[in-house]
Image (cartoon, rainbow, N blue to C red; front, side, top):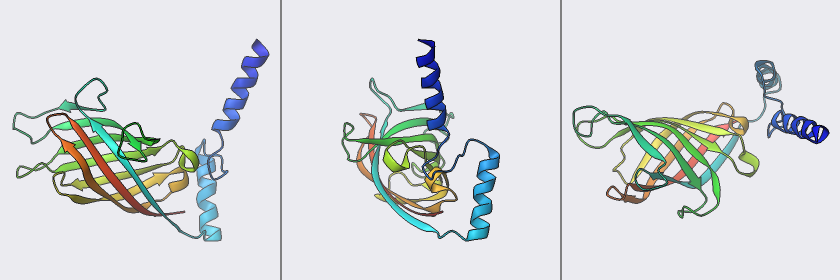
Length: 188
């Protein structure tokens, strides 16, 4: 029994120490080495396009977003935390590709505008373990919005680009929001 447990732990340790690019990224030395490779070899910059949906559920039994702070002024200064599932299709039961994790806050007196500080964390196939971070203005009630991609990890190291958000389904009473996401990023 002990041999089996030790072998399993060793195997998990080996698997967790390898990134998708075949580079060990467990510590600062490996990441520094990766950066040195870029400056010497001038690795070509890649462009990646992604399309998926995230499901923000603030009511019901499977809540994925909760208000963590709120001001005394109606709809201004509401701070929420989210761990929203990301799926291939608009149906919650479609194939899961990751989670949108982070914070958003209402930041306008005129309309429901959000300030987003979120990370798209990928859990599927070649992007497993990689992430893209967005931060910026999200005028939530507009049909289409652009939010800047300000960084990434794993396959998306040094990412920069744009995430276009579209309200696929929006029902405040139900506390259910399905947002269609298209991302175009440059990365190494």
